[in-house]
Image (cartoon, rainbow over all chains, first blue to last red; front, side):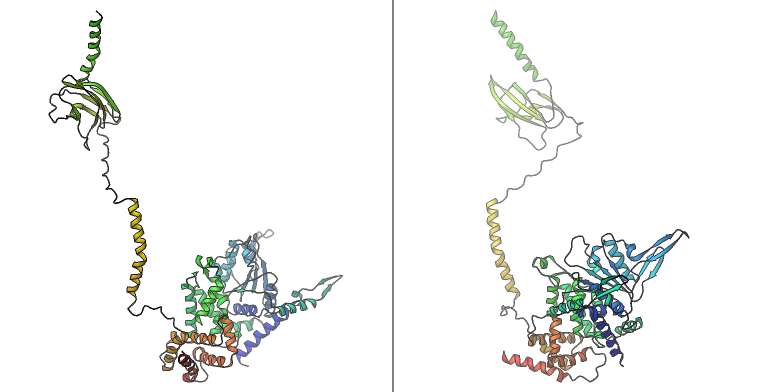
Length: 325
Length: 268
């Protein structure tokens, strides 16, 4: 079997597995896989109740990866994420207690609810992939993917991530409500969840209870895919397209802050992973246009004139993309 | 008996005024002092015109005839500390000399030591404004009115004669045609190839009427169109594939676009 076919089969198996518990959300699954295959991080923006946690849980189990979830709150401390040194009174020595960041898949739920120093601690760990506790520096497990979420509506009592920190997320995907038929299917599946009995008690099953435990692949398969993504061919013409697109965001009259070189790098990395997911060994403009919104939108800041005209970053980016092709 | 007593009294009261001429009168710098009924011999007197460096300002507040002389009420103010003769600051109205005048010593006491501080030179006066507020408003109005005219003339000068009409934006076909020709001739560089690919995507968006769709959605729909999908896939193989499996015949690949553009031009 051709290697590309093998990878396509593995990716399809992951998608099918996730699909058994999460209805629809194909695009989110694809974005999560892109982030995972490129060692990037992803920020999910969407309302509560869109199965973000379930999705990450199912993905982690499908590839046999460790999964942790942190609910960000205003009183969270950096040590609650990174870990700390605890004094063992019996031996009078300090022992290290590693925090939930030491995992493969970390779901940082409602990241904008924590104080900036906590956000900063996580974002630093994301970039450096190592954490210092006391005098020791520990490397984070490989692979390491942070999936952060934030609610775009409730803004009171939140600390908005500044542009420099948003730039560290390779992708920012906006989750939408499921389509009508998908929502009907969600309800139908929920009706079939059933009840689990334990001892003398019984409790209604949740979707988390039906996530299959056996993986469809292991870390070795994932390593092969990460390696394969790095071998996806990027033509000179594709690089020209990326530079053209990022450059247009910098000179657009409605944009105050355009895409950084990191945005261009993310576009190339994302396009490589998407090409592999779609069974190609080279990137094409479809990959660029498909990922442009998720890579660029959170990196753009509109100027006062655009805001006064009631424009949004999405409107301006759409205009730029339409002008391009 | 009463009359001689009256004269004696009058002589006694008049005597200090005559003596007061030679008596030094002291006053502080900057404050006005006055002398009443001062009899000075000779024709009528007036203050000398004030110079920039004058030490005393003298004013004659009243002049009355007194036999062959005149009796004066004076008001004066010292601007500098020191001893001065007040008569040096008077002159005859008829222009004759003031040699016959007595010495009229005055002293001005300053708070600061002498020569410690001298008054500033007065600032030179400004020339009066030409016209005034009304003239200024009229001039501003004229300039305001002329501005558009000047801008219009400048703009006309920039445009070469005979090319004053608005510039026609290049159509997609106008942009695409030279790129296709260059690709066929093999002279298209990487930047041109990228531009050609974007223009071809634009071509299909226009042809399949997908203007309102987002580029990602439009591309997905183009992929479903049989001809477009085939041509674009071949084109992508030429530009993006690391090792194209079959040699790309550019003429065959680009001819459909060229003929479509030429048909559009013929219709125009």
